[in-house]
Amino acid sequence: MSERADLIPLIEALGTARVLTVGDAMLDRFVSGTVERISPEAPIPVLCITNEQAMLGGAGNVIRNLGALGVGGRYVGVVGSDSAGREVEKFLGEYPSVESTLVTDADRRTSIKSRFVAGTQQLMRADREDTRPIEGEVARDVLAEVDLGLADCDVVVLSDYGKGVLSPGIVREIIARARAAGRPVFVDPKGEDYSVYKGAGLLTPNRQELALATRMPTTSDDEIVAAARVIIENCGVEAILATRSAEGMTLVTEKGEVHHLPTEAREVYDVSGAGDTVVATMAAAVGVGTDLLRAAELANVAAGVVVGKVGTAAAYAGEVIAALHHRDLSQAEAKILALPSALDRIELWRRNGLRVGFTNGCFDLLHPGHVTLLAKARAACDRLIVGLNTDASVKRFKGPERPVNGEMARATVLASLSSVDMVVFFSEDTPKEIIEATRPDVLVKGADYAIAEVVGADFVQQNGGQVFLVDIEPGHSTTATLARLNGAEPET
Figure 1 (cartoon, rainbow, N blue to C red):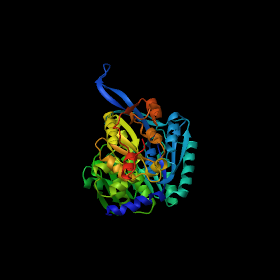
Figure 2 (figure 1 turned 90 degrees about the vertical axis):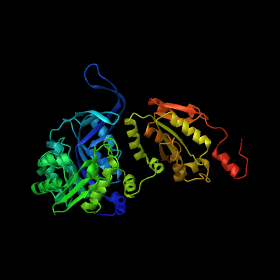
Figure 3 (figure 1 turned 120 degrees about the vertical axis):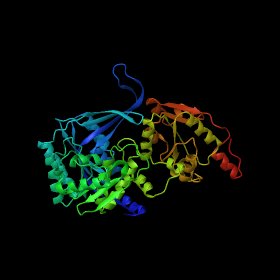
Figure 4 (figure 1 turned 90 degrees about the horizontal axis):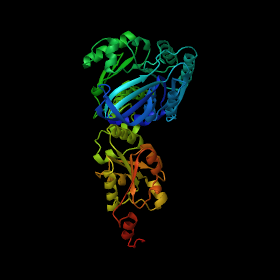
């Protein structure tokens, strides 16, 4: 086993990998709300909807994970000529490192999985899909794009969700072409017949999928290994990486190697999409030349990050590096987040019905005025985000001598306050972009502003939120404090 710290250079090298992903494109929709009564029409809960969100699902979640790790490459998928297909295309555009080609099949509908959630409890899932195998011109177009990807990618990922793109014939053809080009193929499999994946370098089934494909028990370590060896021998694949939820994962190779990797998760909230994280991380790691075991160790850490989130999520490179540091973050440090990680946590808050607030500033020398503002802001919401100007943005409008304290020092002091639940840096001149990304329910500023002057007020109000102006302690400011320290009287 590798030392944990030895894996950090591997994460930093992943940006040079190029992965070709082929598979079923779909949308994941989350409809969240609260349940307070049972319907008088039937014995079912009534969901009072408070939030709706759409994101990439299926093979698109592999792309989200590759993008989060900074990995480049290509994606080939199929969508219908419909609004859902256009949404998939729009979301894929958020990951420019991966060149995405969506072949349009006018005779099929784009798959949508809609999940209805109260708090963290999923009440129901409704699927709209077309699972017919692709054929004819659509199949030929997919294979033509695969050939282009094989020319400039290191590893192939087949993300099979059983929605028709990876029909047995297409799978066999892609594996044959990849092997001819010297490219390993990693498969997140579907169904009961794994013989269609003959020639693949790695399959990543979960425990239940492995049991279904082998009709063998997969409860204990020995049972997992026995089932994996049956697949390797009977289906002609080189290795199996079986994911086991809260118990970690097991790697078994055709050479007889067996490695049990214990879970890296501190808390397991949701295992949705963890398999996509695993196959994406494995492919990227092998793409930069590492071996299967080292890649599996890294994938295990990434999966541990993802299952601590709600919904189909991604592990960002910074999060994985933090986990690899093998140290517990202090409570204050855990509140200081980059925007992508912040958005994941905010989504968890919202799914628990929490009201999210936002305020911002430089907070250079924390004084009673700041403390009062933050306490009153926190009183107006359930969770308070503080947008904090980076050092560069402070210098632009405060002058070259400011800030007195660096951004991490300012963030650490803010995060130590019980009134602050999250600190997120922004480098722009205004917090407009971070407000639009976090979509706060409450926006708070000091009463020395008018609502019309508050950046982001119109956006928050248009989206059903509120803007509060709070009175703060008079006679306190960083400028006045610095003037006194310099022996000068502050301007009045």
